[in-house]
Amino acid sequence: MLDPRIEPATPFTETELATIGQDLGRTLPKEYRDFACVYGGAFVGGLIDGDPELPILTFFGANSVLSKLETHVDLKGDGVLPVADCELGNLYVVDRRNAVHYINYYGGQTTSRKVADAFGDLLKRIVVFDG
Image 1 (cartoon, rainbow, N blue to C red):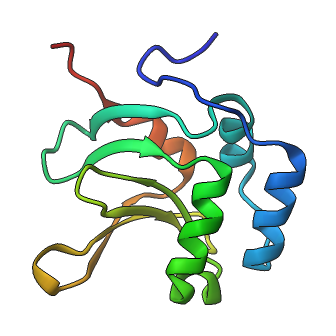
Image 2 (image 1 turned 60 degrees about the vertical axis):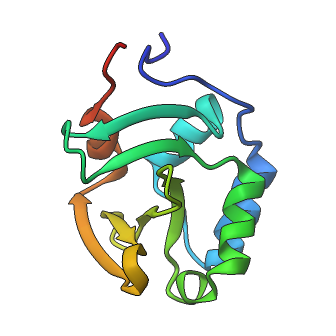
């Protein structure tokens, strides 16, 4: 059964997942692979733990992930996987240990905040308000 909080988009193909893994030089987390194969570049429009400082708008489709890796060469070089963003363009990324971080680019200062120990933990903590 699909998660009603998340609006699915075009699922990733195995080829797309393999390409992303090759670009990063690492194996993608199973939880992320499973999610991407069902939901693709899904719309969320929610908050992590209901926190207004941790908005999440969309998960990236395969082409968007590859584009973000080209734009943010520092992420690619560190094997960091961009997975989602908020309406302001701040990123959610998965590091090599599979922890999820929120990268905020506000005000010309870049800050990073660990928000989950694993991708699956992030998914469980998304709150979407009906409205």
